[in-house]
Structure formats: C-alpha cells, structure tokens
Length: 109
Image (cartoon, rainbow, N blue to C red; front, side, top):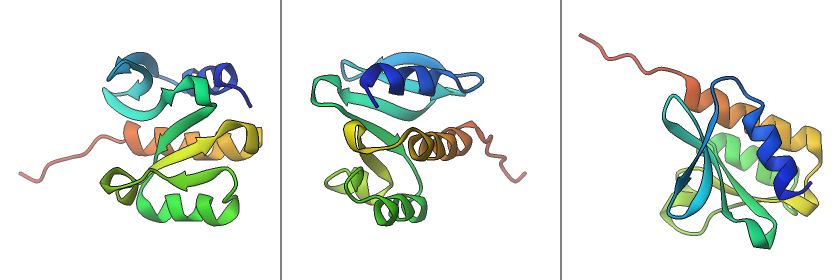
C-alpha cells in the first residue's frame, strides 16, 4: 500500500473529508478525525481505534500495526506501516475507525 492508496481508501467512506491537523492530512467524518497521514514521507499512517480493536490489529499483524507511543497510543491511536499491510486488512481497520467516528453520541436528558 502507498500513501496515495491510503488516501483514496480513506476518502471512499461516505461523508469523509480531507482536512489538515498540525500541518498533516487527516480524514474526518462528522467533524471527527478517524485517520491521518502524520508523516507521509515515512510511509506510515494512523487510524484511531478503541484500545481493544487496536490490540486485535496489533495481534493480527504486528509488522503492520503498532500503538502510537505515549498517551495517544493508549487511547487507540494506531500506526499503520503501509508497506507491510494488505489492502483487505487496512480496509478493515479504516472501516472500524470510520464507523466509530461516524456514530453520533446521544446525551441523556
């Protein structure tokens, strides 16, 4: 997978827009970031998953997925090494990240 493949795949989800956060591309749905390209030159991307889903991808393919270092990683920010991930596995991770971000949270009244 390449950075361009990642971008196209992220933008293929309904309601997704590309924006920028801290001078790097991000992908949002309902105003929420679900994926970024924090450093496109190094061939890595990031998907935002809940910690349990993050752990599943790390266990499935540790050569392609790893938690971001520090607090963001403990909250589910997950590095994706694009050269090491297969398209169908990446699509699964992006789908979950998009679904999580696209869900509207309802407040109790």
